[in-house]
Image (cartoon, rainbow, N blue to C red; front, side, top):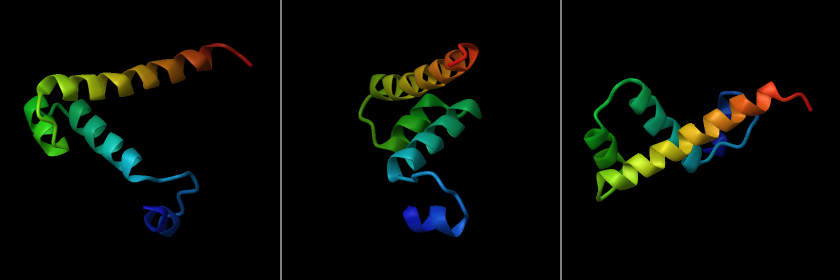
Length: 71
């Protein structure tokens, strides 16, 4: 992943975790069925996938909220 990031000029850490996160988030926002996302990630239950995706949405909300408060 580091080599791919370097090859495309991406200067932040690129990991398999970030790739997995991006994959799942893009599918969700594109309207892919939760069952498909769950199967793609290798989860045994939809609840696991729901929790996984919700945690990312919480991170996004937190980032935007932090933008409202000047440092």
